[in-house]
Image (tube, rainbow, N blue to C red; front, side, top):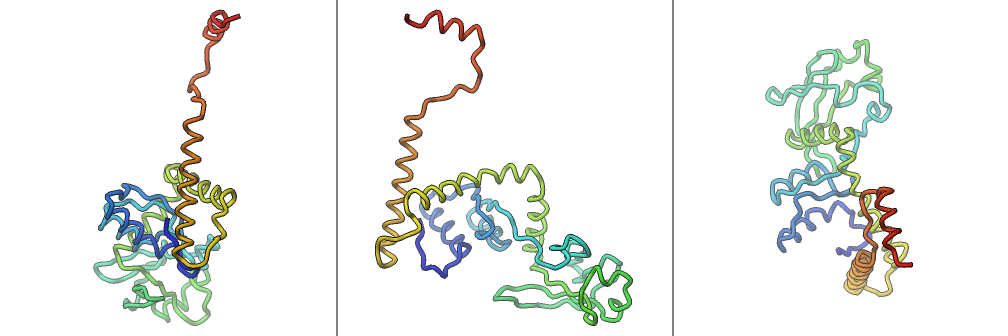
Length: 237
């Protein structure tokens, strides 16, 4: 359990969770999370530092073209990393390639030639601007490749079936919120609230363990008619 003040975002704890688990020798081979907990940089760090596969959906491309499902989104451009050039769907190379900083994160800004973009016959499928050329904001190459690969994989049914195990975590959160009052604290202060969270989690684990021990095992196969008949004949009258 980790207890924080309200403004702390979920993803800010991903690295801390991994570091704490690794310090106690409990780092998982695979950590299944929702979109709030991962990014290409966090996927890279989890793999490189702790050998953890961080599994979850990468946020989709936020561009207008990708959201509309039409036009040329970022995936329609060919990126030549060695030459530091991007090639547009019509075959025109980019004009400039340079560093860009967005909300404290490093990107690469790619711009295309203004004159070429203005006369392009498919301009409306590429940009909504009437004057400015098309521009791209790319992550550094290792992160860009992680982002591209994960976005392609998560559209596959095999990936979705693998990720379905996440539902178990969501049901645990729902149980603690709806049944055990996890959303409200009975105390003032972070330390006391954290103690409540820990005790609530322990209670959930104990309740689930009791349910599991008391559950009647279910056979995986339906009993045959002959077996049912034999059981009826052997039953005491």
